[in-house]
Length: 427
Image (cartoon, rainbow, N blue to C red; front, side):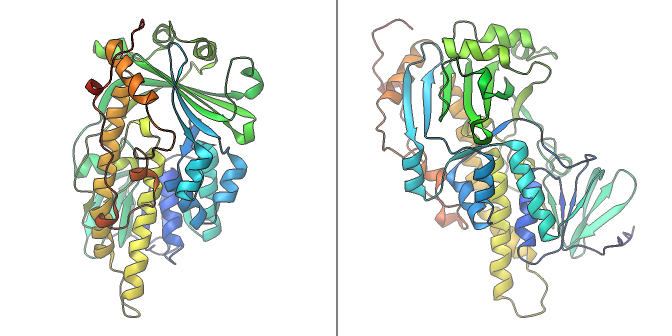
């Protein structure tokens, strides 16, 4: 089957998926002079959800792209990240985010997901990226010197490189790997409301606050210049644990947060109740590149949300791939074909291990946040003992994005719960 050339001609790169990962990658590659076409299945480009936390390993890339000032104008640069116990509200540990910025050279910020998506969408348009909608991709094939995608309407699109940035339920992942998503049995409710609605709820307007508790946690921070307030309520669903299909429902939300501290209790009634997000990830895989088809973002490494690195990893993926393409193109003789095989090999060599670390650490942090009983008290004691200037748990992820495996920093050393003395007070 020979693909029909499109009126605009064959692009250098096809990106399947117009979310943050797909658009940021399209923009990164277009900055290298490549013709990029994005295929998005939705009728319009857009994002759902509420807030995102953007750590210095991502704001560094936004700054390189010339997009950081726009992002800061739409988001918020908070002063602290504070972790509290969800039951008694006591502070467990704190990160001074201004000091964090001094350490890593770039800010920690929060932004509405749709605002970050819009930044990349506008950047792609300015760069001349071809953005197509209503493009439902149902299959992928390698070809001689490239790859192609099969669309639901029977058409074929081809390019020297196809990037599958098609998300958690990736068609490419299903076809190439065949594994399934993994349910955590946790579900997230979100809400972004005018800040006036929460000013009397004991909130910290200038901080990112995370309340961790038994089988639940609650996140709060301001958005859009402080005009909006974002809340995320996450809990373990008894219905999911029992194997029921209808799980994570609003009645479970209300039951999960009974006994929480006052600020959390006041926040729960404000959560959107017409939609919720069941929390899935996938087991890490070692192979993301299959010929000229490359998995990227959640198609390659969907994490649980506890490290707030999901969108960031996708943006890093595109940056790394573009950097390796540029490096090889600069070294190649004039008028030679791009060394996509070399760029893809270098991309996979460094990103697979980093993202595996984030995925597995996110799972472990989820377990840590949701401890109960004596384990909760031991966790609290360890967190309270942390020095304010101890960055051993963030250096491995917030520093500059590695381009080669030897640039990847060492992981932190976990502190065993058994090393902590249990506090002599009621749980």
